[in-house]
Image (tube, rainbow, N blue to C red; front, side):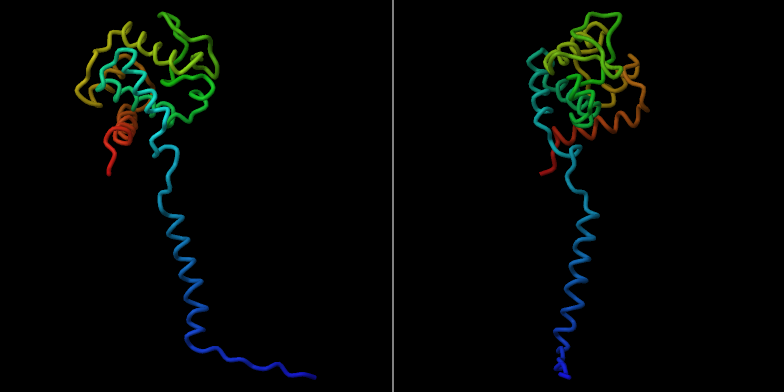
Length: 174
């Protein structure tokens, strides 16, 4: 019967066998706990397009920033099913008492032929319900939305959501 040669590991090799796997585990654990980019914290090309469309259809740059931030909040940064399948930027329900460009209803929300039509419809809504053409800040803008019963969410949470996207799109940290 053959005997296996015994082999010895140096203390440095032993430390390496323990240290490197432990270091790899620690690195992977830290990596998992970091906040990786998600669809919600990345500037979306659609948001920039919406910002320019709003200006094209008559909103000032200041209002276009507020409304783009609102649209990003309403659609989960332009990733929701209502946005993707209905071209609905603002979570609008099908209008029954005002003129609308909606082509129907799907999932309980208005459905539009295009993003452009959604923006134009928001412009109609904005005008017919008597919104101001300018608001000094996000708080006043959301306060106006609350007064017009635009959304059903908690106003503080809605304000935080709009502010989050405003900062993401228009006040990026360098």
